[in-house]
Length: 76
Image (cartoon, rainbow, N blue to C red; front, side, top):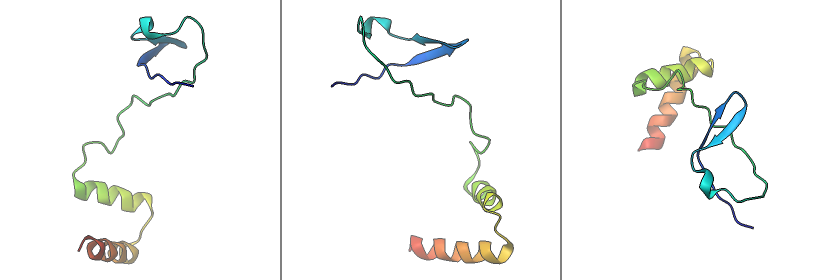
């Protein structure tokens, strides 16, 4: 069995392959949907990303300090 990956767009529920000549005459396909939206955290500075993660994990100040201590030790 061989696999081929082709780029495609989806318009109104229709899959439109960028290079249709590469498709076989017959066959089966699996479609993976890639989120085209940019995450809200994209472009954050490292400290801003860390703060966003801490909020997401619901860390209070004590837990956040302990977590940062562990991260610093792991980086040594």
